[in-house]
Length: 119
Image (tube, rainbow, N blue to C red; front, side, top):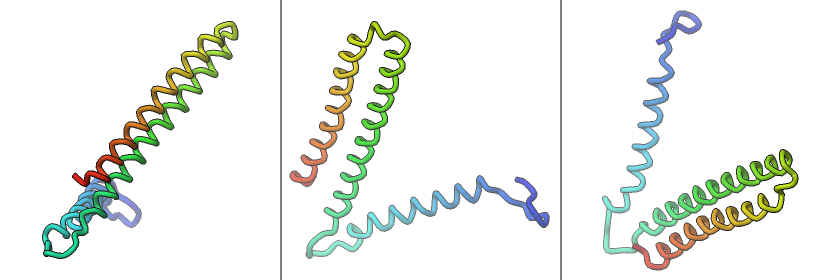
């Protein structure tokens, strides 16, 4: 705890924890509302599933983008330090970028399978 202006006790950690718990609880209640009020009509579950798939591919794409950026940065630094090794560095870079890109394509494939199979 810390004393702020006007001698008011402030506890930022407690406030942040309370905010996170409240936000997560609200998200879970909204996500489970379609199951709680299930009826014989059309379900809303596909919307939640589509949201999960969109978040999944976004995380995969962001991770792959960061990985590719770090690989290119390292390759540029390596070429700048040793210009004679630029051929081997370029070959390794292209191979590594292909592997990283394939991970993002696999994530897209899993999302498409989940979309069309509707597990």
